Amino acid sequence: MVSVDYELRKKVMDAHIHDALKYCYQCGRCTDVCPVSRVAPERYNPRANIMLSFLGLNIFKGQQNNFAIWGCTVCDTCDEICPQKIELTEIFAVLKNMSIAAGEGPDYYTTQASAIYDAGKAIPSQAAIERRREQLGLPKIEEPNVEEVQKILNATKLNTILKK
Ligand code: SF4
Ligand code: SF4
Image (cartoon, rainbow, N blue to C red; front, side, top):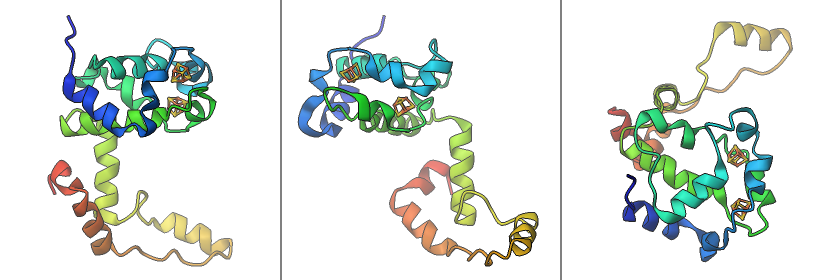
């Protein structure tokens, strides 16, 4: 049996601007337009995520369930279509943050975050890319200031999550 997770409910309600979440009437337009729901209807459903978050029913715990949260690509299509102007992706950010805090985020997330922490950018420099840019007459890519990037990421406590 799933019990009410009051922490989840409070976080979701606190995060939602204008308190509009309670006006979701489950019309399902968000799910109709969601590109992820179209290809994986059994595994991802923004309408259901909104309902469960509002009720504080945390079915998102555990790595085996994390596609129900992390499947969202943050394309914002649902935010644009919602007749009640609910900012669904804000709610989904709360769910994702809770998932990371519980150490249940997907591996690809921490791997990518680690690459950004170490190199200052998502895709580290590669000789092949540099050569291709030169052939195309494009300027050299300026290297990021890794120290500065790490300072910013440390302020968000990403280093503690990544154990850096
Ligand atoms: S489109 Fe908006 S009102 Fe309709 S189910 Fe989704 S969140 Fe609720
Ligand atoms: S933001 Fe997420 S939930 Fe909304 S339509 Fe895009 S993939 Fe679907």
